[in-house]
Image (cartoon, rainbow over all chains, first blue to last red; front, side):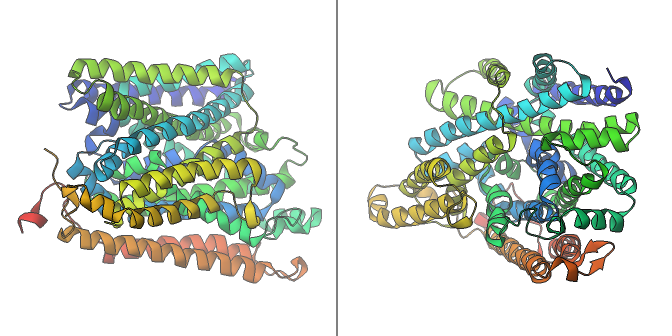
Length: 484
Length: 94
């Protein structure tokens, strides 16, 4: 085992644990267990809010998969990755104050709470909960696998042991600490991600002999590597631009991001989070993908993209620094998994169990249920991850696009279009989900655009059409008083 | 317990305006990104110019674009975004 590399990783894990147990105190003390456990009592300040959004969003694919593809594709892939800059400001600005105010009025703790109050429909709740559980399970499994692979490659432990170590570390602090632990550890993890990117970028440029040297080496190998079109000239402008939908503006429809847009304290917190978030997300995405490209002359001939970043860190950094840098993808993965875990748990406990199965559960019963559901989900994911499918990026993007096509319009029209009604929402969610799955299976990348584009358009048209068409029906059925 | 949502709430006017600003910013961001990347990058690689060792399309689109967006976002938040309270109902009791 490579102890100089592992030591910083262990220290990092210990810090994370400490934060988890510290948050547990708030869980024990809080007046409203649900609001504390699943939303941290809406107390996030600007820095924490920015970091938890960035860290939740930045995942295995930003640190492992993405740089790996950049290694093969060249600067064109960095260009594509920069579509994510928009997530830093767009989500918070557009959901913004309206979402924060309305969510408070509805006393909403989860995204589904908001949809339930807004549309007054059981079907909306069940469809949402189902899609969160289905899509986020696949996403969590992918991240879990990424985490285990990383531990495996760093420590030399067998995959199963690595998976158990990784899973155990995450489960402990999420189960005991809830959303507050997730958000606070996200802040630590966000800082680690930022620092790791900075250190590795500088070291890689140095190892490659400076930027001009690296670029001319790349151009000498294959001029396409420094063009925006990718190594084989396959990245068309239309395809690359369509990522603005998938990883830019569509992110608004991701429940794990949306729920953060109701967790902050006040408008100052939101304002500073927008600025900090833009800087941090832009820097990490630019830096990590650029590192992937610059790695090519430094470390030629890597076959498996996912190993570029760990191999590079070991090569260009002294062992202890490599440990710090490799804590970054670990942090990215943990901070995504923990957010998904608490979200799936909230969908099951808060949105399904307490709404329809046992509405009058006592506080202590709710506590027990929340802790144990979170734990059970964790264990199911471990079992899924034990016989893992291969393509991390694919699985991850699959759940990304699926959730976006389901939730984006019910959220946006729910906030900004008073005529939107439950029929529109249901139709839009179902058509979004179905068309995404069908297109992904049978006709991916239609018209040279990423698969997600069509389902998002379809679900928008369906939402508008069905809402307008059923308008009379809604106004006859009495009272949606809240929208007078 | 749950309060009805009054669409005339004055705070919503602020919120709607700021959401619109978000949309405008993303459009500016996209145009800048696309324009420089494919405007300069579509040239033959032999004819590329370089800034700080990077191809100029990449420098303007991704590096300068990032800096420009951070500046634009900071300025809009500082000067155009307003503080509103989230908790109470002042908009409704006038």
